[in-house]
Image (tube, rainbow, N blue to C red; front, top):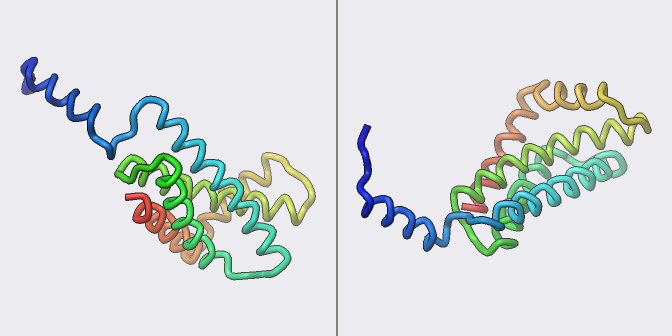
Length: 144
């Protein structure tokens, strides 16, 4: 294990505090909150679109992934690895919200069984996995 000198620790602290790509302090809740809000709203909108218009939800999830990445990075005026990871995770959350909202709309009820069924349905077939991965990838690329 290599011990760092005081100068190295000070240099690292200075770099981290002046690096515009890293999130600091109150930017974390703002980035996570913005991405979570966009993920929930987009998941609910996609559920309504899928219910009434019957569009291809996989293609739309890829587009929503890009929107989540772009809006998250725009809300905090930063692009970087941390913002990209938050965006990719929230893209998967958006897909989960889409499944839960779809089942709630179809059954007019909400319970733990619907949540478990939504989790199972997310990973039920290869097309869903491809859409989840592609949406997370585009969210990551838009925010990085």
